[in-house]
Length: 240
Image (cartoon, rainbow, N blue to C red; front, side):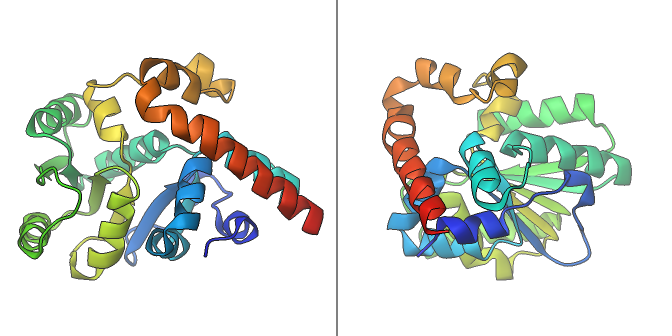
């Protein structure tokens, strides 16, 4: 089972520019208080996060826990941040990127924006069926679509924990150097969902505008997962 002290030890504490990319296969995942709480109930999700090559602190709660338990001051690195960083790297090196997930409309909007902002990038995509679990046939088609293009970077956006578990199961079959699960970033970048403004992000309250826009979908992570996470942090601090 995932443990907070282990998460804090593993979480990435450096600048994204210090990542070692493209030499060996790298799986980059993010963690926040909600995904931590979900992983406590889901052993396979916990394994997928623990066995990531890079685990980014995508939440002010993770940043707080790192300071409380390890005395380290780190920066929050959201999925949108690593997405932007990797696109800039891909543009400099004229790389091939692939988007796996979301609807055809969202993927089309992403391609249009990339061609405008990063014309040196080659971009391909595949929209998998919307269902709780993929069949073997679904997986074969998804893997084949990715490998046909031989991308340098694979962005996976199928919501957590589905995306992390899928990558953990299938990464060995994927001919890719960098795989990162970024969920809602597909919609942010496409413009179909608005990300919170820099004002709220700097305050550590990126979640607040999103909660107000989507209370039915996001209430649990803020009013259930956050208190549970803080309780685990208190216990971990007392047992330190």
